[in-house]
Length: 77
Image (cartoon, rainbow, N blue to C red):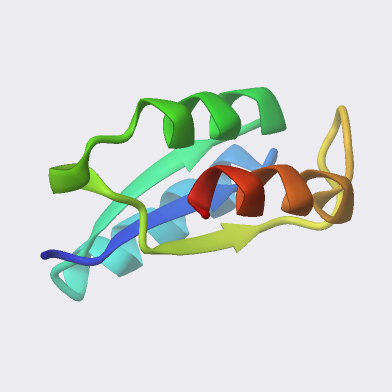
């Protein structure tokens, strides 16, 4: 299975640069600019497109990465 990265960052430019760097290494990157979008992406994943790595910004606009982390882990388990 190909490694799938989820980049959660409200800095759109940084998220896009990081996604391009990940893609150049041959992996797939998904971007969420807010926590709600990240949770929706994780809920909607299928076994053939499972997120294997998460890059999480600690200071998001509507929440913090530390507040979002337990919710992300609950979905992944």
